[in-house]
Amino acid sequence: MATAVRCENMNHRRTDAPVAHCPQCGNVVNASKRYAHCPEDAHARARREGSVFCVHCGTRLIAR
Ligand SMILES: [Zn+2]
Ligand SMILES: [Zn+2]
Image (cartoon, rainbow, N blue to C red):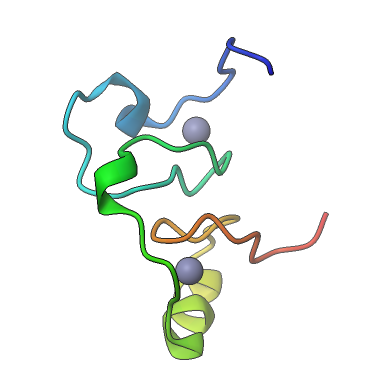
């Protein structure tokens, strides 16, 4: 597993990030905030805002 995070998102530098996953790279930034399931409208909203990954469950929202 790669340990080097090439991601500019500020959540990686926080010790208590407000979200479970980084919206840009999908890596876990705060495991205690993880959701098992998200409502589909939450994913639709995040997608419109340009998040590549869901910050709650880590699901990829935008296909490469
Ligand atoms: Zn990231
Ligand atoms: Zn989600």
